[in-house]
Image 1 (cartoon, rainbow, N blue to C red):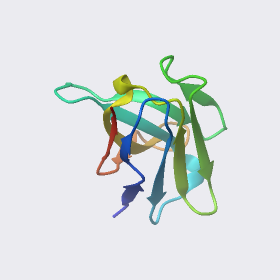
Image 2: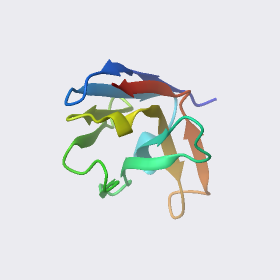
Image 3: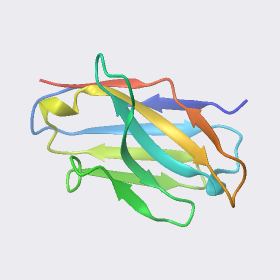
Image 4: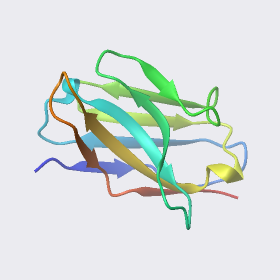
Length: 120
């Protein structure tokens, strides 16, 4: 069973920084899109924050462009999210995600347990 374990959330002041890390166990890491999503309190859905496709295409939500940076290490099976210039509206539970789709395989998602980020 694949597990995604997140770390690095916490409390930050506006303008501050936090770094989230996610490590995946026992998976062919290179065939999966890597991403971070977030869900605000009371929100009904998770929104994409940033992602990296299997061929190295980076995608960021407009609200975080220029402030957040996603990175990966295919040898260590890790996905990191460096968050700078944090704002109160960045407050949410952040989830690590691995997503697979054709031609790399059938559609499937793995999720981490979530880590709280609070900016006040």
